[in-house]
Image 1 (cartoon, rainbow, N blue to C red):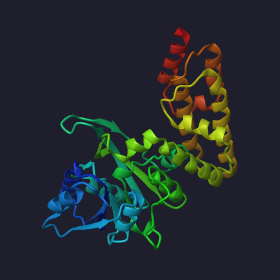
Image 2 (image 1 turned 60 degrees about the horizontal axis):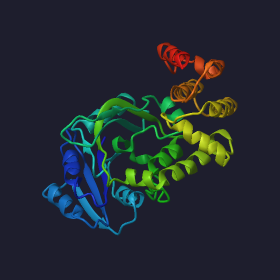
Image 3 (image 1 turned 120 degrees about the vertical axis):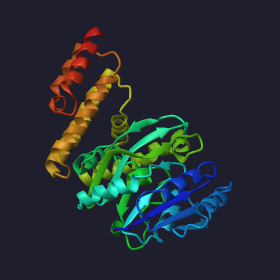
Length: 338
């Protein structure tokens, strides 16, 4: 089993040196590290060349700016390893990232896409916040109806998943190309996440994630994915209004008004019923995912009364094991005090 790391970098001079050093310091052998400078106008090229100097594993290429997806696809065309390991140009990889994921896929040979947890940080000298994803394939796939359930900066995937032209990422996406990819691969790939942190994810003003969130492009791209996935997987031709409701359901901390909870109830049950008819997703995993979203909608809702509490319990989604009984009783006490 051999591993090829790809890294696409654009104006990442402030952090790419540290990012590349963390890749080269992996405690598992790497076949190659392919870095694409996507038309940077800062010192990215110089910093990469400086760190890579004398290391025969590293290939560095420069291209005109075309975006992450195009740069990553170019890197993928150079891959010779059995597995593709993704590394972002501003993150820090823990030294055992590759070895930990490699051990996981050896224990679970059916897995073709494997990721892990991240520690999000702003100050490299201080501990960050740990975020995890569902571990099992059925849970990951059910969650993909609403959001990306694999952290792209932590992922590695089998090279034989790639099409013959190696155009893995859709260049029509600037922000959600990873989410788009997982949903396109969901029918034939096998997913798994490890619960341990494997990547320190740097949060800073200059990163693509922040600029896309500010521009609203992230929301527009996710709506395109939701519309396709709901139609292809469940046969649901979602309206714009339903997609807005779906988007709110994907936001764990969305603030709900009581009158909107009725519409959410109807929408989640429509998804549940469509899957019962088509049997595309594991029923238990989907029920657990929908149950968590139903609970968190009430957890962050405004001005709830006894009527809303009864509405919560009338839904079958309130009765699965997605949320602990203790948390549900806490919700009841909060509503009772309100």
